[in-house]
Image 1 (cartoon, rainbow, N blue to C red):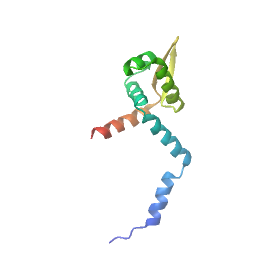
Image 2: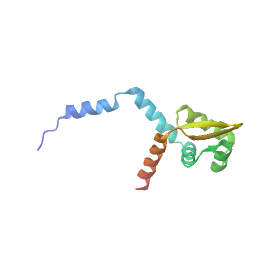
Image 3: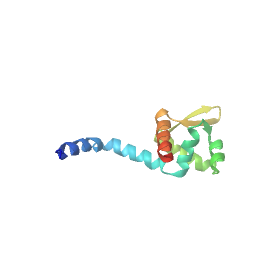
Image 4: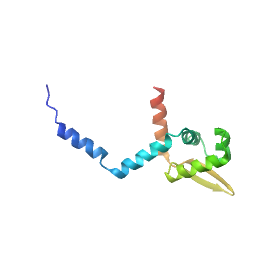
Length: 110
């Protein structure tokens, strides 16, 4: 039976979880996406840019409720905004968010 170096495995695993700042940030991202309303917003924005009115109509919630969620999503850099006159349009912040959603969707469909 081959010898297993537990100490080497433990050191490697500790390196993976050692960066507290990264762990906190990652946990916060997953926590935010665990809310069904916010997840629906991110899914809707993965298809196209939308304004608060559009998002409220898609989700069947108030504009105020959407605005509250958008502030949180923006703070965590999951979405970004673009102004066009008085209208504010939202989209996913970058390709990484699209990738995260795509991988999660693929995982749940298997």
